[in-house]
Length: 119
Image 1 (cartoon, one colour):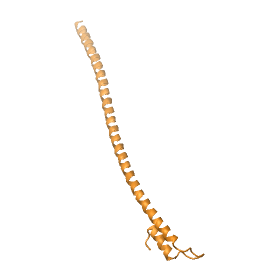
Image 2 (cartoon, rainbow, N blue to C red):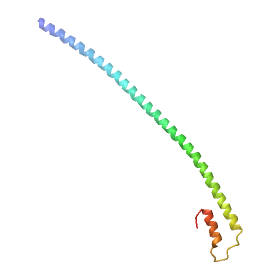
Image 3 (tube, rainbow, N blue to C red):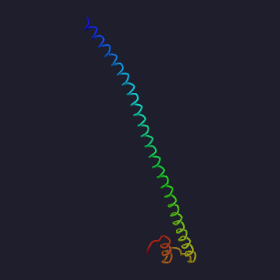
Image 4 (cartoon, rainbow, N blue to C red):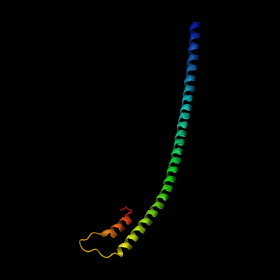
């Protein structure tokens, strides 16, 4: 009988120890899960900050490139306007073409100067 009582007490102590261990593991698991989630969120925030920095760099580069392209476009426009005015002034001084005649060397040279082509 003494053996049965001793084994019963040992079983109850083992059961109590297992219940305490399960409780502690559960709280540790919840705590570690919270830490994992917090680390995941911190990583996501860091990744988003990195993306924001990258987008800002691209936007600044696009702004700078846009200003450069606009300056180049103004230069091209000014050159085209200058060439067109030169062509119009030259052609205005030429006599009108007779019906059925080709443009002639002077007009062809003026067109070549207008387009920048070499004869």
